[in-house]
Image (cartoon, rainbow, N blue to C red):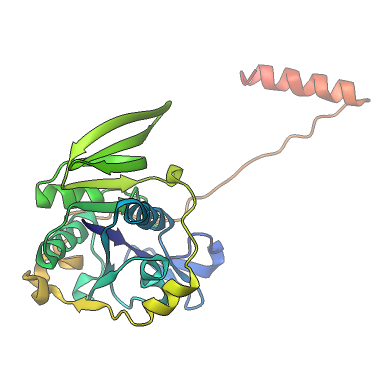
Length: 266
């Protein structure tokens, strides 16, 4: 069984606000050189889902990542965790893409890589939170897809998936090959084992440019965008605080209750 997992390098979403700036004229996010690059946490859980299948029934797991200036210590994390191969779509032409151009490039790379039975993605990336790339890949490859999976079981050429809903979960089945996006409800991703880290040092990533996957540079990255970003800004968060007065704690509590009732909060 061949499993593809798509992962993304992002700026640390836990970084403080002062570690980046926004260029309002160019609608650009400008991180500080000191900001840490990490693997998208949702994608780590997609890797974990692939490795659980590999542990149970055996599989070859190949990680794909797209971007520019990819940090090998970050993008090799799936291999540190136990993935077998790593393919990087790394070129300036891939910079500045949207969900459409990113999904298109990944789909073309997956086709070039050869046969596949299952494609896994994180439910969304923790930077833009669009949650569209996995569905885009399914569309370009003509595959069925299931979103926000919390559990995946493979048997008899089908995937049985528990997917998250607003009030619990539902169980669905889909014929393979298929695309599944994995949610954080899957559980904690494993820590890289020492033996996997040692083995990963011998794994050299395959690096492809647009020409290597048979596409023109004008169809990927910024030039291939379909989304027009109108405005990028930091929200202004304002609030007021009203202190409840009273001669005693009970009176202050009563005044608070009356104020909340007047505001129709209670």
